[in-house]
Length: 410
View 1 (cartoon, rainbow, N blue to C red):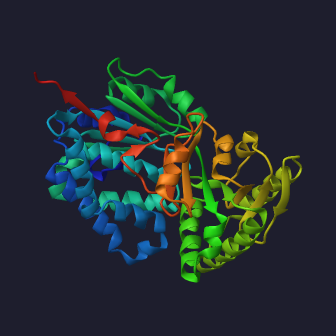
View 2: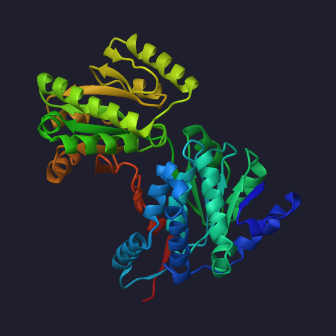
View 3: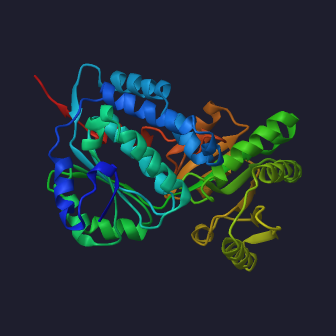
C-alpha cells in the first residue's frame, strides 16, 4: 500500500496499519465545521489561481464546485433537511475510486468530509496526468499547519488487488463507497463489511441526450455555439467514459426536421472540437473504427458516419437494442435515434441508464415524461452542459443521509 496523501502520513511499507489506525482513531468533526470549509476554499483557490490549470478543464470545473459560495449553498440545503434533528457524522468512510475517472472520488470525499467523517480513499494503480496533478495540489494544501485536523482524518492510498488491504479497511469502516465497473464492484462486495457498516455502490451506468430538432433549428447562431460547447463538455471531458457522459442521442421531431437539425448541430460540434484541439490516442481511434464496423453489420443500424482523426463517429440506430450499448468504446462514438414523439423514448430506457441531458424541452414536460418511466432507469434529468455536475443526490442516493447518522432524542 502506497500512501499518496497527506505526504506527512508516509510510513514504511510494513507499517501501513499504523497509518490507517491513526485515521480510524481520530474523533469525528462536526458537519460543515469551519476548518473543513476553509480547507476546501483553499484547495479551490490553489487550483483556480494557477494559470497552468486551464489546460485541464475537468479539474477547473471541480475547483469551481469547491468554491466557498457553493459549499455555503450545500450547507443551507443540509441545514434545511436536518432542521430540528440531531445529526452527527457516521464515522470512517472508505471510498474505492474508479479506474477510468479517478478524480470522481473527490466529490464523495468532499461530501463525506462536510458531514464530519474521516475518509480513506483507495485510488487505482492506473495513473493519469490529471490525477497526479490533483494529488500534488491536495498535498500542497493539506500539509499546511492550519489544516492539521483535515490531514489527520484523511488518507489517500494506492494498491492493486491485494485483498488483505481491502479486507482490513472493510472490516473497520462505517461506510464503504464503491465506484467502478460491474466486475470490480462484485469483487469488492464479496469481501465482508463490519456488521454495522453500510455500503453505497456506483457500478456501470450509461447516459443519453434528448434533443428537440425544431428547437435546434430555431436557435440563433450564438445559442448553437453554446450548445455545441456544452455538449462537448458533457461527452468528451473524460473521453466519454464518465457514467453521466451521453453515448446515445435521441432526436425528437419529423424526419425532415431531424436531418436538418443534425447537420447544424454536428457542424457546431466540429467547430468546438477544432477549437479545443480534441485528440484521441491512435489506439482508441482504431478501436472506435472497429466498433463502428461491428455496428454497421447489425440489422438495426443504418448509416455509419465515420470521420477523420478524432472527430465524432455517428451510428444511426432504427430500433432499441441494449446490447449495442455494451459494445460502446467511448472516444466520441454516438448512437443516434430519431423519434417523432418524446413519449417514444420510454421504450429506450434501460435500468442502467443514469443521466438524461436535454435541449429544447421545458422542465414540466420532462417531469411528466419521467413519471411514465417503466423501470428503474434514469436518476437525473439535466440541461445539456450539466451532465457532469455532481450533486449531493447521485444515482438515487442522498449522500448526506448515508454519510450521517441521526440521534433520536425523545
